[in-house]
Image (cartoon, rainbow, N blue to C red; front, side, top):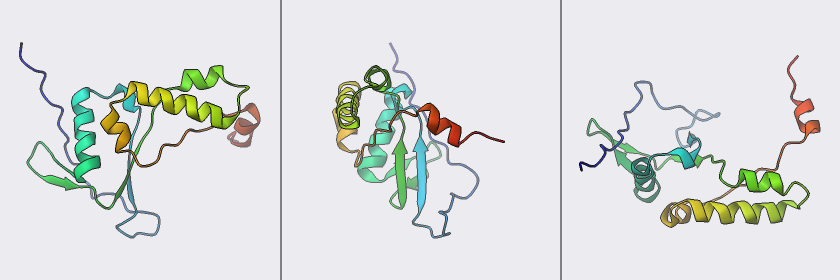
Length: 131
């Protein structure tokens, strides 16, 4: 049985985005829904987090030393929803425990900060309605 081909990163044709102040060192990349990523893509994320660079399909080396790398995930969201009457520290512990169960330990270990967002309330949503 042949292994599945590795996914390939292809650099965008446009220049990388600049930060709000226009300085090069304020770049950021967000990868959404980490839990849905193919295992081979997770290997690429590990390269980025560990080495700060990755080689793309064209042979070009992309360096991420000046970037903030962010991942989003819904891991633990169902647990958090069931804990609606719990205090935020308890919810954070439950969600982070679930993240450690679901993701590879080397990926969790290479992630510097882990943020758990509080559940939005109806009052929060009313603040942002569009006119």
